[in-house]
Length: 298
Image 1: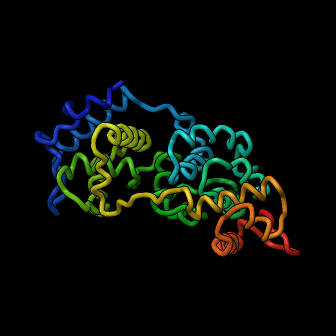
Image 2: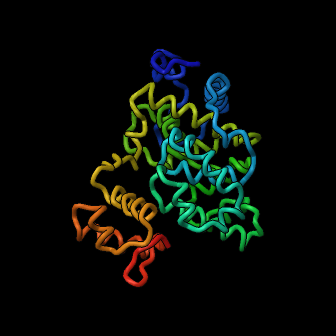
């Protein structure tokens, strides 16, 4: 196992001797640079591959679930929840048939609860429009609820070993570190051609796993290169956020069942007007419904 504390002294992170500079508009890499870069990433991965349940399967459904879970959520939290979710909903058919309340109950602890609803909605769409089989192309995958272009491409790569190009946070970190060692405000449009040129077209699935593992290590070993990304933002604090109130509302209704809006507001927020607005938004998102004066899980 490579010790992250020693990485600054490793040739893996030598900025003075790097052959990888792409700090101009000219982004065509030499074959030597591509080969050297791949060698570094593969060598690290062979010695330090992270074990994750969804990496040990090629089941498209299992991989689809993991990719949705991993959106904006730390790997450790997904590792803990993934087995429970897969046990409750082992395939598209069982997830599509499940009441939203049950899906949300199993999802608790993951945050961003709209993902659970969109995951279930996607399962319904797969069953009704794709014959129960997850689509194979990013162009089809992006039509599913909650699936943007990057997630669609990552699902295609991991579920079907498709040689597609995508960027996520760990991949971005690797490419900024190696190819833009002194630049700020690096746009993904400059990174994407480098991802394409260095892609292992024979085994893109394992190559992307390798990039992600290297990027996860680099976050601990060096000052986070993603701070030099054009799109970098500091995540807002959770305490006192709308996300926190939304979570409280769902938790209350899961625990207490259908309740008056006043009761939910009193239990879930210090600012009644703000909490009312959040509840209205959740109703609009079809996470909640309101009938006969009672709020409930939709």
